[in-house]
Amino acid sequence: MAREFQRGHKAKISDLTAGTDLYVGVSIAGPGLTFDISCFGLDANEQLSDDRYFVFYNQPKSPEESIQQLGAQAGDSESFRVTLDRIPAGIHRLSFTASVDGAGQMSQIGPGYIRIVAGGEEVVRYSFTGSEFSTERALMIGDFYLKDVWRFAAVGQGFDGGLAALLKNFGGEVAEEEAAPEQQVPAQATGAPRFAPPPQAAGPAPSFGAPAQAPAPAAAFAAPPQPAPPQPAAPQQQPVHSAPTMVGPLTTPPAAPYGQPPHPPQQPGPPSYGQVPGRQPGYGGQVPPPAPAPAPYGQQPAYSQQPPYGQQPAHGQQPPYGQAPGQVPGQQPAAAGAGLAAALQPYKEAPTGARWTPQNQQLMRVDLSMGGQAVLARQGSMVLYQGKVDFSYKGAGFAGRIVGNATGQEMQLMRCTGRGQVFLAETGAHLHAIELQGDGICVSAENVLAFDESLQHEVRRIEGHGIPGGALFTMQFQGSGTVIVKTHGVPVVLPVTPTTFADSNAIVAWSSASQVIISSQVRLRRNAYPGHSGETVNLQFRGAPGNFIVVQPYEV
Image 1 (spheres, one colour):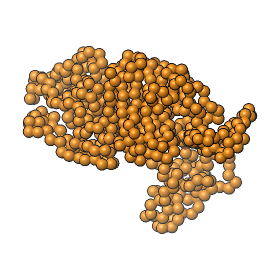
Image 2 (image 1 turned 120 degrees about the vertical axis):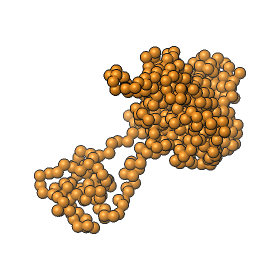
Image 3 (image 1 turned 60 degrees about the horizontal axis):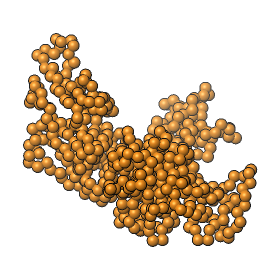
């Protein structure tokens, strides 16, 4: 019997089926709408580093045929064959998407689904409707992703823009090319325009689960109004289309140093100070080395040679520190479009199809619209939110406050609900998303920033003798969901062995299946014992292979 997934649900493929040769069917339809259904093969950075793994109507299979597009069959609008054990090691995620071809938006679609069939039996299905979306023109439906083992996630996230916007989101480029009239492909009278048509009709679909008849080839994008008989391609000419063509990932060439031309050929005349021919002058770049001539081009003049306040420096002189060339003191430098965009590019929001997305080491974003469940976060940790989000106080109750005060594991939490994105951070601490799938982890309350409300959490007591209070306490999280752990600096994860000891103030978390033993070293005169570590309480960990501890380079 197939398992019904909701948006945000995840599971190991091995928990769904023992097979690796899978059929993926997608159903999506709307009145008067045409859809492009594709599969993106992404690398570890969720980028399309190899465009041969963009499987769509114009490229129906990957090089080794581990991903094949089969066409419409068995009631599905589109279908794929995925052979997991043949996927190359460089591919870490398969994202199945649908985009509107032409006018329309995702709010107009009817009930749809993505399903996985193994051995002729449907093992999982994720259903969605247009009421879950608004003006989006693309949809990321579901993902296969590699995390130790292959897993499946029901994504269901809308995306503004069409197929071209999706391609750019995954690191590809849509390049415009000019049309060659002698190489144009005739248009079909009734076919809808398609994106980036092939110069020749595509071959038949793979035989695995293929429909009885192969789908007709798509009509050409921006085809001429009058049909013309096809002409054979000349071997010495390359066919060119007026449609955007999908190519490899977009790579930005490195910027030229400040004050130097981007190309080796010399210009007829010397450019003005700090200005590259054909480009706007930048600020804060590298100044060319000084020449032996007095006050040469780009050399910093002596302090006594600085121009008076409010006066522009003469040609060949460096303006005062902190002032851009041509800038009047007290005024902000004018921001050039290309320079400003390049400067802000590394700090742009990182959109993905995941519920929890780290924006950098100190900032975490959670998409509340994915998963359909609330998030509990430490009060005061919200730095920004988008969309319709409600915040409310999450009390622990009278008994919870008593336990929290007595054990030091009290957490002042707020409950975040709604449909939007919340950005969380606290005092510049490093944040780490730990996903639990039925397992457990122990974390001190002071190292917890946020977690899914679906997780069960309780105070766990670690017995010990010879220490103040007679015990240590920690929080234990169990179930399916994500907990955000904060650390001072970059932590280290170590396997648990019989000789693993950690300072109780530096330990951040450990697997709940580990056995913890308190090793007390309280002495009257610690300095008299040269072999002593200087720590009064250490924790010794024991457990089967697979258990771990997380230690931060910091002590309270």
